[in-house]
Length: 207
Image (tube, rainbow, N blue to C red; front, side, top):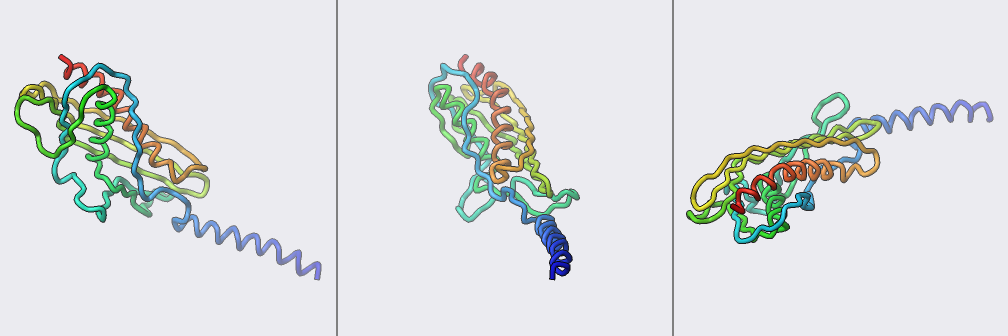
């Protein structure tokens, strides 16, 4: 009987390890499929006042709670796509909201819209809004990286003052908070963009 038990235990362990590896390789490792960042303002500008319109294209506005926007992909350790990363808000809405929170903190009254207002207003027109989020799920850990690209046309008193483009990336590796990792790198990249953009935009709007 002792001999049978000695033979059985290694075989059971090997079977368990093999099954666990197959499950993980098949995409059962934890990672985020749905991301919706709760953005916290990061810029330190202040002294703003009055209205600022923040414009995104109408086709980037979510019209139904059933709509999901693809922000990126999930890959396995062989670099093969195994899933997608979704958000209830479009990249344009996520970036519009982040700008709105930053400008509000700076003292402005924010008016988010999908149409540029009549002449005489101060306008941040988000002409390009890209979020590329990638997670790599393997047996050891989870890696995530995010790239945010924003194009901005700044209008004041009906005239285009300047055109800007901002870009930032963030990447992290974690084995604990896998469900929060994608949200974290997205927030980091957004905050990096805002740290670059807000001093320039605020300085021009105050003049």
